Image (cartoon, rainbow, N blue to C red; front, side):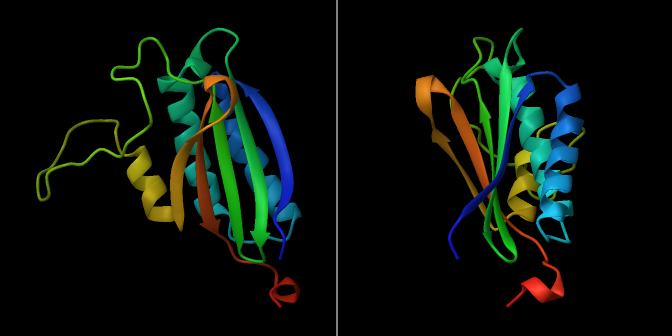
Length: 150
């Protein structure tokens, strides 16, 4: 099956856009026949949050773009494109998953977003796009309606 773009939305780089992105992805996937969209919604929530908090998208006038592509009956790709590194991001660069010492509890309130993304996606990664913008892509399994599985 050929990849099919289901939708693209540009959102302001503000915290309130996280909820809009979740709802957009859930509604779009369900309307296209995907039933189990919870993993996609969770992953989008984490990555859009990261874009707003850790990239130039979170500055005044910043934008976060969410693109959803149907790859097959039970597989989608969601890409979150940000405005590139923020001047306050130290060190600047691509997002990396934090590693915590095994067996040690942590009281940190953040730092688990990419770990969650890694847990609920088939695969994920980063790439650079035009004009210094960065993208996090995620391949996510869903369930499809029974009549669309063949």
